Amino acid sequence: MGLAAVPWRRVLAASAGPDVVDVSGTDPAAMVAAALAGLGGMQRFVSQGDYVVIKPNAAFANPPEWGTTTHPQTVVAVARACLAAGAKRVLVLEYPQAKGQKCLERCGLAGALDGLADVSVRLLEGKKDFRRVEIPGGVATQEVDVAKAVLSADVLISVAAAKAHTATGVSFGLKNAMGLIYDREAFHTRFDLHQAVADLGRVVRPHLSIVDATRALLTNGPAGPGETATPGRMVAGTASASVDAYSLTLARFNQRQLTPEDARHILLASKAGLGEIDLAKLGISRVQA
Image 1: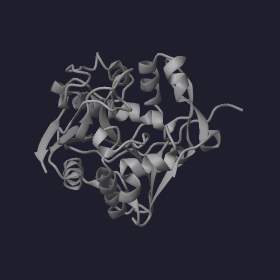
Image 2 (image 1 turned 120 degrees about the vertical axis):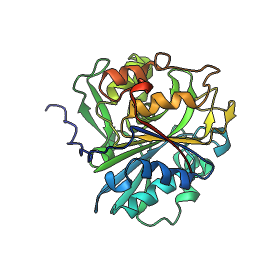
Image 3 (image 1 turned 90 degrees about the horizontal axis):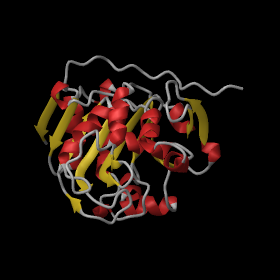
């Protein structure tokens, strides 16, 4: 039996708006609202009756102040916006790197989502939760085991934390997708990690990518603890490589002002068609929330 093909991905309605929205502020909910408004509203992404998967970064059992996880109120705001746009079901999905429930509790996500109707949280556990799919055009790998919950979703939204990473320079939206695959170790040990992340982006391709830089981990990522900052920014767009490339400008990660050449998976993802990374060629809207 051959590998499964990735299900058809909904084509978004065309927009004359910006490629990337950069929101400054202090209130995550207001910042999410401003970012969505700049991109045409959540209704551009979510339709009545949709099943939506939100992928935050909640894989570490660390306190929010460490900056290793997505701000819980950012996740809540995105989930609420999906429901307001007509989503029938919203699933917050993560593959934790420690005891799952402890990750959710310590990062603040469990408490933030408690009682939010029609929103559930699921922690991926074992091989049964994944399905092998082909990666057309893959260079480092031509197949990968992806969470079944993603493959059956109508809409996928990435809500990544902004943080440094010892192996890839940064961990933003593109790297966040590794929390949806079964064998992460293979990416680190068997493949060129940068190329493998870019390959993964061909099949795990969010309709909406948000990088939460309300706070940021600048060193010793992805798990911390390390130097942190509060850029007070949120970046959103439809092309993960474009959002990630712009997010490099928000802070000095690993004590350097990085470019896509330094975080090579972003460069390779752009070459794979996952977004323009020349900021001079992007339509960028900067707003205050």
